[in-house]
Length: 425
Image 1: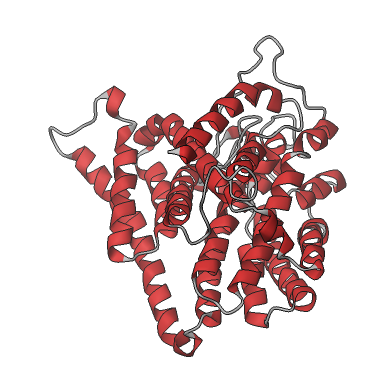
Image 2 (image 1 turned 180 degrees about the vertical axis):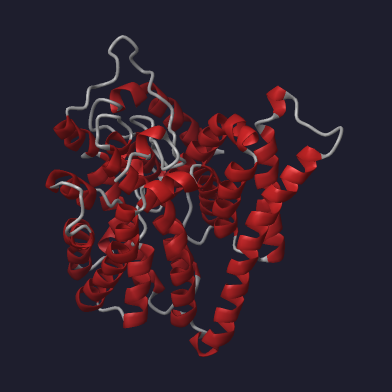
């Protein structure tokens, strides 16, 4: 109950400060992270949890499922067909370069074996636009830049997941049975995709039956009910819930646009609450002991991951693109390590990998550093594009997030499905 109380206080403070956060370097995501760290065993000792605690796994699992479900709803296939080149470069070239670059740095600076080093690279490859919300959330920023960051972050979580699972199987204590493990992983991924398609289609069929239909005020609960059934079905059948969630959101948006529109406000609020809770729990794991457990080489790897590997990989992927120099530099900087990396890092820790503790420590410190740096730099960088602050006559009121991402705390975040993000690239 102490954890609930801490979350309630942090949520109240975050809402009251959200207007200020829209105009300054203050970030509500960082607030939840700091609140968790302060309440944890490393400082006040109000909350006693560790990375193996069931509440950590349950919170992270449910939060990522919720976020991917709402993210999938924002995936507009016509918009992607109209402006796919720059995101395709970032995902097809920039992401593998960052993945490989992080693996090399991890191996030589931290001393992890190659399999675990590549695993760290895969975990830290996904990005999250949350901590660049002032960049992706304002019309004044060029649409192609916003679209690039949004589509890249919306898809790279799912692209990284199979690689993470395969490398966990290869690096785990039962690596001798990797072939059978890969078969199981493949079956889980296929099962997740099948369920992600089947549940929304079933919902559509039910809505077409005579006598069935949702009352207007209850219509937002239809996708919620479908998502709940999907989440339970995945865990009962051992299908992968994350691919199922993203696939179901995308299919639901395509086949049931009216329920999708009705659900959006509720879905975004649920996604924000889930992510804030997960950030609070993750913050409680950030103890002085964890930071002390990272070697000097590990800290050097963290710095390189943020200031060199991501920027260099994206800049290389955008060579000879139609994005101008300033936009490229901004896109290169804003490759924050986000919530998917938190969940994947916990999977690494709980998998029993021989070097799992070292890998998790590096991952956790890198994520924490990224949250601090990227969430506090998006407003100053956004001002390079002459972005106006929110209306001074309405302090404390900030447009709601348009992207299921933690701490979309400064402005609405358009996605590939929104008009602001569908301009031709």
